[in-house]
Length: 250
Image 1 (cartoon, rainbow, N blue to C red):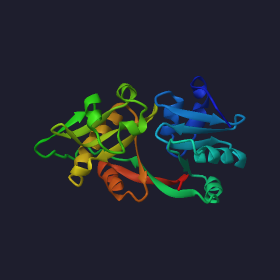
Image 2: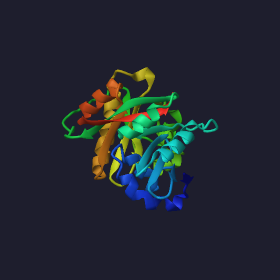
Image 3: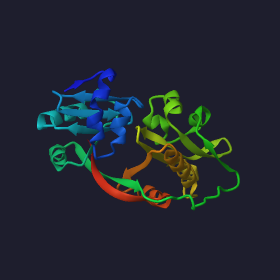
C-alpha cells in the first residue's frame, strides 16, 4: 500500500463515488475540496482518509490490503484520528478479530421533506449569523470547522456555516463538515452552556436550506446512540435510511 500524490487523486473519483457509506467524505478529498490522504495497492483498492479522521476502503480489496490498513490505524507514531467506515461484513469480521479494535454503529439519514413551514423563533438576546473567522475564534467544542477543515481559510473559501450567537459567544452552530459536488455533510454542536434550548435547530435549518439552494443533497449522520442528534435530524425533515459499522482502536 502506497500513498499517492494529490495530483493523482482525481483518478480515483470513480472509486470514491462507489462508496455506500457516506461517499461525500472520500469525494471531498478526491475532488480537492478538503484535505486528506489516499493510499492504493496495485490499482484494485484504495483507502481514502479524510482530514477529520473518517476513512473508507474502496474497490476490490483483499486481507493483505486490510492488514496494511490495520497497520496504519495502529501506528504508534500516528496521532491523527482514524475511524474506518464499513458496510461489508467481511471487513467487519476481519477487524473484529483484532483484540484492540472497537466496532460501533453509525446512523445515516436522508432528507425526505421540506421543513420550511417549521418556524423557530430565537429567544431575545440571540442572533443567527453566518460563521466567519471571528466567530470561529470563539467557538469551544469538538465539532467545529477545525474538526473537518485543515485551516480557517480553507473552510471560509470552500465551506459554509451558521451560528446562533448570544452576544459575542457562540451558542450553537451548524456547518459543512464534508463537501462534494453533489452532497454536503452537516456538522452540528451546541455550546454546553446553551443546551436543551432548541438553538441548534435554527442553525441546522439554515444550513439545510443553504445546501438545497446549492442544488446539493444534505447529509446527516451520527453515532447510533446519539439520540439527540437523531431527534434533531427528524425535526429538520430527515429520516433514518441505513446504518454502517465504524471501526477504530479502543
